[in-house]
Length: 495
Image (cartoon, rainbow, N blue to C red; front, side, top):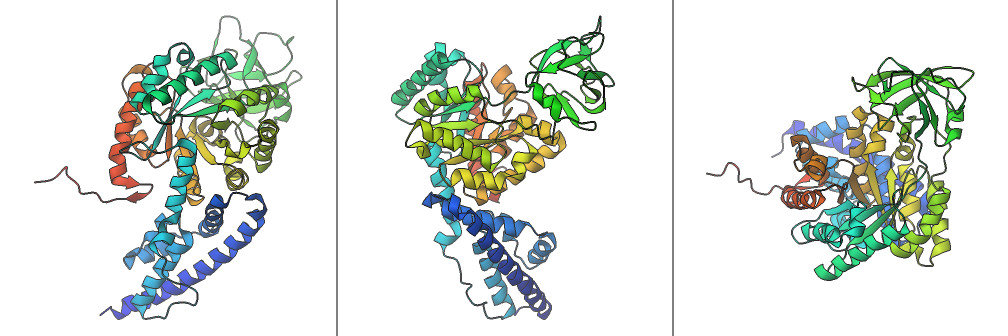
């Protein structure tokens, strides 16, 4: 017998949940109808519809409802990303049984196939991009190549033998001759191992960097409390900290009060005033020892629309090579659906089967985060898609404190859409570059296992990093699938 108070609570929660389900289904259908003209790939329609439902579902604060469900022994809504309506239906029907209430019209028990089909579509989409998973682990490993990979075939051979599933070529560096040699070595490694090694090629995008730098006499380090003149006037007196910009029009988009970040966030501040020569920024936080102000250091203006086209003239030239040789094209600084369509038009000019070329959308700015649903729909609706959580620029643009929160939300959104997620930037950086990881890096890599793919940077110990990550993914895969514990038997405390 169920306690009368429990029955009453179950009925109250049931009514709330049925109303939530109706709102979610109605709003989700409306959103999907708006999106449907952009979805040409049948394999993505299920993911697109579930994403629309997920956005409707998460527009509401579900925390009070979750706690009431937990008190009744039901809390599966926290793992509903890939199966929104199926999760709601299952909980509703359990509550109907607990409260003695007839099931609402049109709500039926989801079958095992319906409940888990989102996971199956996600696995299919990941295989489409990276090929079959390696024995013993599901997560894929992507490694950035350095120039040495062009000159020594053993570099890529060792990465592949250690467990790399794919390699990344950054087109901001080197040239087509170097890239061709890298790809030749990749194909040789594929032949030797008898398995696919996918090639990602990143277009560089617009690079906003310092140039024409000047410092006061006898000083070269910029510190907290100093002022920095932003100017494109080369004739400005050199008695202050001063820098120009590789993309001069950026300075015309800036106003007093706008934030500035220098050299990957090592120093941060705000623009405080305008002068006859340019804009003055005051450095407010960052490294206590300051930084040497040099040319070719990154400039970021978090949250400011700089009006930059993510496809540069060089990118257009690089796409000629990429379209012929790559399996994936990495899109830096993509921020809108219009940016996606612009790249797709360029790819269509270069190959008839451009839809078979996977697009890797690198999410690096608040604007890209805000527009991520539209980016996913317009990209995955027409070609295989993976979303890269580009934590370097994203941390600078959002603020380091918000990065962990935002990478979680991106993971959830990708899972809801059945889209592959790539966890990138400084994974096992100590191991890859210096031979020994920090404790925090190992924990970070374990958390990264919830993404379908993890990217390592280039470095002298990259093969060791791949091997360590492969072992870690194998162990974490036995314990966790996305947010869901698998409840493997614990052996650490066995008698």
